[in-house]
Length: 524
Image (tube, one colour):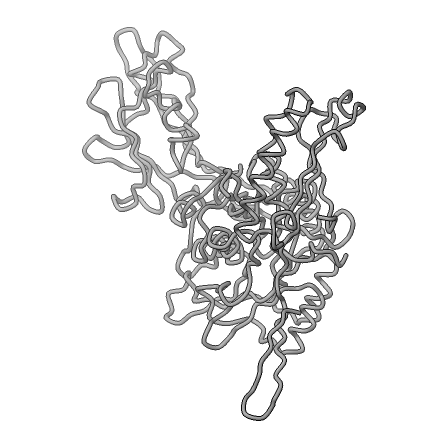
């Protein structure tokens, strides 16, 4: 038990066993890319991702992360956190803007740097940025325009008008452009502070016009450089830990990553966090036996973990980065899986396994490896979830198992994710009780709120049982809150839930008899 005041949820599997603002539908992608914020960033559309991280460039192979997010939104995902994993020796593109050189009066000096304009984050992508400055209507203000991918009017991506060099002004250039909520998606600026000198008033500290006001000449940023080496396990571990900044439960994917050390560390993170689940991509160009061997190397804190699931094989999609008609690309399925998880949660609830004929990967047209019946048997017995191509239906997810080998009910993805959801809701429902009187009135109020939630979850088929008493129980009274617990400042609540389990196998017994055929169906 923790030593800090708060709510502690202890989970026990197989013991006698809604909208609360809690959702498991948020995806979280942790991957290498040469552009984008270095902090966890929420994106709610493919276009928003492209603006921040870049998309597909015709004829250029995109990082796995780009394909993953593209497939996420195509498969029903609504919003995802993106965590960029930097490599080694990246550099930011920059350029310096000179102030307005003037002579006469009280001012006499050579032009000098007044602003440094830098790409928003490291990478060679910043070398494709440029800027112009022109005068605004007011004598002490200016307009700064940002270009990306070229220097024509068609390349203008942002225009910032009526900017000032006065830190007290509402349109102060650094405050406006560097705002974390409404600022530039391409650049940041650093004020050299020339106006701190009485000899350089704000109007003269403005950056000089690039060219003339009627014939602007864009100035290109330079010096940006991509990572010299791919991110290592330490870089991934650091990046995954940044997800601590996100308070919502998460479904994680590390696009294209299969390294044992990196995946195992992510599983441990999910376990320690308690409200995260990891969808693991398959090996590239691998056989079923190679995938089985690899999956067996993934371990949480105590061996194969119920906080992650492996899928196989990779899928074939029309290549959005190719200019050739009919071109295809073999990609990891993790992005589509997170989208399917999210769509399934919204339409059916977390208790429904994200698999089956409705778990369609919409833009997949084939598989990297064709699966035989023997392959399917091997994958399922090894707790690896098959992705199948079913004639007339398309490419679908056809497995719902976690990596755990304990034989308990959390071998199913739906059970583990239901537990994640229930624990998150219970913590949210009972946090009000911290520092309340530890007495029967508080116990009863907390019990009522938890029971009301569980009743609704059962009615939505989230729990099994013909009656609510068969589906769940809640104990929070003097039987588990004795004087010693009260004196220790601890309020104990015991919750038992009967979780739904998927019917993985449907057995139909066909008996022939005179005159007709009888089929008896049973879930194995």
